[in-house]
Image (tube, rainbow, N blue to C red; front, side):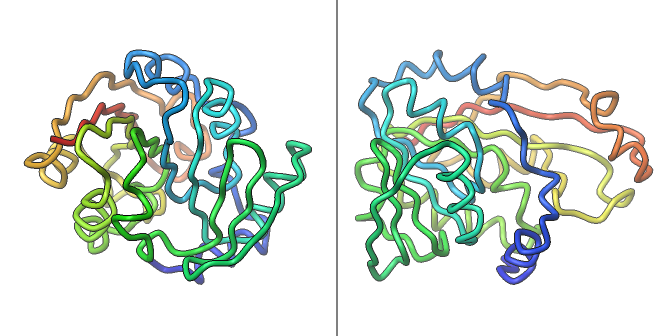
Amino acid sequence: MDTEFWLQRWREGHIGFHQDRVMPLLEKHWPALELPADSRVFVPLAGKSLDMIWLAGQGHRVLAVELSSLAIEQFFAENRLTPVEHDSPLGRHYVAGPIEMICGNVYDLSQTDLADCAGFYDRAALIALPAADRQRYASQVYGYLPKGCRGLMLTIDYPQDEMAGPPFSVTADEVRSLYEGRWAVTQIEERDILSKEPKFAERGLSRMSTGVYRLEAA
């Protein structure tokens, strides 16, 4: 993972990936997971996503990891939350109510750090990683999530030769190749989104779809 690339994006305000609303696919599919309200939910490469506010609103405790301190500070300021801060070997922790954000590298997490996560939500983490990094992410980070952990993963799929990522194209076959074995993988939705993403059409894409997957650790 090119950490400097993402830090520079936040410094320069080039954050077109940020959405100013809760992801509708999260609202649609999350309830079917039937996680208890007090479950801890892991959100990797979180940015300043409003999805964290929504998850907390469902009664969940959110554990998010983000490289950029700017993203984290903006998240709390924009949502009028005042976090309590402390440091650990993982980085700086920002805690406000049920939301804890760690400013650090997701690869520094250990099995102990994720042991009580009953759920996860991965909207933009896997697709932020180039192909060479995805196996490590899937085996290491997801390898530390406990048995029974379940959550949603969102991806996008487009002809990779038509546009340089990120976001990168991740096919359904690749998701299964990366996760099946330890994880039960079910694709629960796929939809064409190119007509709703003119900036990508302008970059020359001929097609673009989003996939929603339910994963549960065996």
